[in-house]
Length: 148
Image 1 (tube, rainbow, N blue to C red):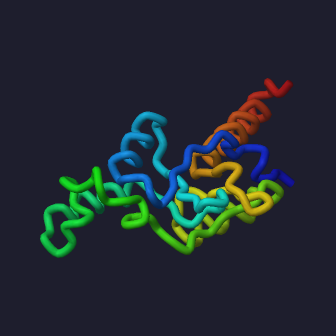
Image 2 (spheres, rainbow, N blue to C red):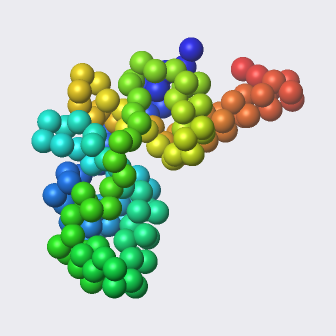
């Protein structure tokens, strides 16, 4: 059984609820990531911000209904304002099959990975694509008789 720990990213980039939206945006751009977990003071994931959340915050700046989140105020509005709460998470020992089903059923692109109450990594849909490519290459080599 393949486990989350075998394909997850261990060196995860994260923010706190107190980071500004502008800081979050810069971190995501600088690290070339699409998801960033939000942790509490103990390192436990309490939320998640995605590229989609950032886009929504930009779009909300076109509305006068919530000027606090607007693009012009990104330097002041915090991650807590736009993060998704009540997120699901995985553990390093969870099976890839199990977490893949969760991600597919919930239509989410990642799961923060938690061990002993702390964020230790993240598993994303891109990690699963990497596994799929490896399996396809292996099947192709078997089909062509070039398996090692």
